[in-house]
Length: 477
Ligand SMILES: Nc1ncnc2c1ncn2[C@@H]1O[C@H](COP(=O)(O)OP(=O)(O)O)[C@@H](O)[C@H]1O
Ligand SMILES: [Mg+2]
Image 1 (tube, rainbow, N blue to C red):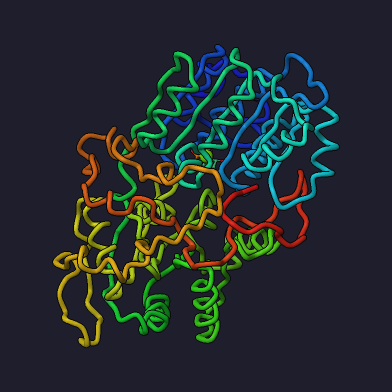
Image 2: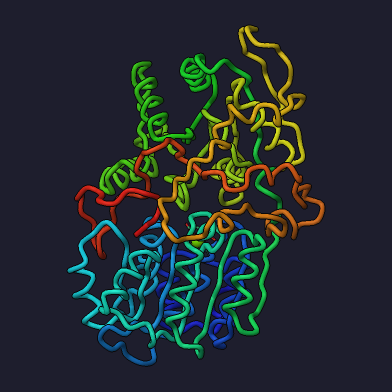
């Protein structure tokens, strides 16, 4: 199957050709004809399956007809983070190089002025994070009633980040006769509900992964004392044959500490997280992509949506308290069908997290015990997590979203059931959820260090500056 049978315009096909996509991914193949036929679409496909082009390519084709008017964007794409929003802009730049479209990026952390000027000139495609979009519309500088097509992208992450309420407010400002495209990697109940409210007779597309990420990654656990982790990481880096290594820590502070420890031992490593400027992040990511930097330390949020192939090893320096994060993390090493190795450090306090992860992936991960024996040397799977809640970082009730009137807790709920990745692939061993996962309701997602500002750094309006971030909190305003 090639792109040429999907109904895309000649301009789009020629851009695809020069950019080098050869065949559409399954979600692209299924979604593009429906989008072009002006049908609503509910598209569920795992992270990394090309959902962006599934809407960008047909949108480019459709936007060849008609013109933009001042302050009335023709199409609107909502993204949960600045980083993801910026990646969608890049898609439009690459695949729309034969088009003369006005694409505007509306995200927080940059001045209103530039964004406002751009809106005045008329916008074909408005790509926005929900918070900043609402700010503009509240100032009366933006009319959403002209939007013919709405894309809600990465809907499950929108839910994670507490944006559902904002999305409902935005959708309420749009006209009813519009086309709506809804994309998500997973389909928790709240997302199903939201989709039902917003879509009219959608084409329901669900792409089943060939082999689940978890099956393709060689996983190992090293049980260790917390204090031994820095040396253990050095040891792993010395003994493994690594190409690109992505190391995950729970907090930004932790990420910086790991960088310092590695540098002391002579390893070149750098960190990306929400406290770094956009320029720093881009430089570090570019170095990691082109091989200048072999070891990248990241927090979960910073690593979201970042697309780097050829990661040979993922190291979970800290285990995530949310089992899905583990799957997302190790999936970084199995992109584009490649296999990889995931090594997780598990200290005494993290034992319950390991137990939850093993339950979710329905396998026990081979482990090596390097603890010094100060603690009872039992396997975490036997521990009673329920008795340890007081000490569990994710049960401390800290709220990281900084979101006033948002989802009121319910919106934070975990992905109950119907995860595309688990429930649509009978036999892959990931169906269903263990009831214990409800114990994490309302847990802070990641970068859970109290009081730290968070977010994705700074992306300016169609160009980047290194101006410092102004607003803290998880909202990508
Ligand atoms: N048809 C294709 N052929 C080759 N690479 C593709 C194709 N479609 C998308 N990609 C690449 O796959 C990666 C993941 O795409 P993305 O849209 O970010 O995935 P998702 O949103 O589903 O997580 C990107 O690097 C993208 O450029
Ligand atoms: Mg995406």
